Length: 489
Image 1 (cartoon, rainbow, N blue to C red):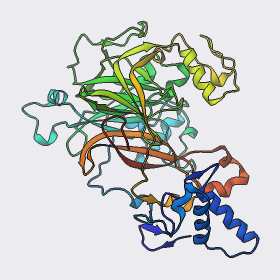
Image 2: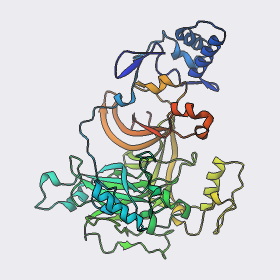
Image 3: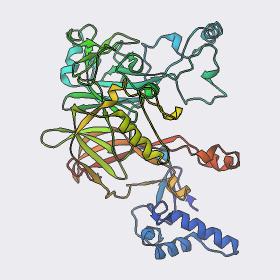
């Protein structure tokens, strides 16, 4: 019940921060819907202002629902109008990926692709997406600068990408890659890296693609296709850290060198060598491209939030006089932070840890594990070969949890249109930029949330309801917090 007064937003007599607030089991918006439906059943006329005024009087948590409650704004912005002004945009395409692994861009190329596919040859198509960005340390950037390098071509940033045979870009009726003859059936995810200029364009011939899942680092077998997902880069005290999803999250400091300049004492990964007590540098092999060489300064360690078995997308930032590395388990609701030593780890029993995670999600399932797998094929996992999972990062001190979240600076239409929140599971993405504000120095990050898929959506009886609440729709948000503990939002 709102009147559109502008192409960018809707207005309502009810303040933002009302409808999605819980009072007991239900939200204020659900109580309002119940009152409205009851009035309709008894053929009573009751305006929304009256309904919300009654709810505000009866339930203290719903006090903002009173139409007379003072609020800074009663505007609910459209999602595409709520973003900051975009100063410039750049589209990236990794030239190192061979044309045979790209979708055809013209008819003649498409005919050539079709002939190859029908010959039954093993060909896959790759997409790059989900980028991350980190400022290059001066010492790393200097490796790529010579007397012939113009100011405009100097590398300033390092970018990462998920390079994958999986995609959700086009409907299956338009492009269903799984139906192509000869296509690899297994989803493949790779790590893409590239140097960027100051204008965010790719430095020519600097992009590479690395197969971390295929040949490196002893991943647990069932998780191999899920490791190189949501790759994130962070520059902490002039060290570049790379983390990737599980759960758990995998973390390692990395170094970037020009072609042929990686130190000779950096070894290529040897599958026969144990990683459990190994702190040597590891030179990674490029699958595509050769403009840069990438090395792990330490083998990967795992980062787990002990209170959330599904935790992922952890951000890193430095805090304190010693620039201690902190991992941000959750950006909002609540803000959860833990200090760590990324160069140290403790040995853990993967069987014990994984059983605990499964028990958090499925308390009634009896999970067993050994070198040959578990009793349920969906819950099987190996233990002796999954050495990366047995290296858990060393934590320092206690977790910091901040629950005192302020109301958002502005509201969006999802709060107006739905009686309870449809965007859930707040995750980090990029952090942190330091800014000066009237409140003092702040860290600013960008997180994301989504409308999750729910099992009821696939039932034919719920088809219309599912269309009105699509799943897997993502939205981003900006947040700022105090750079000192307890890191208040």
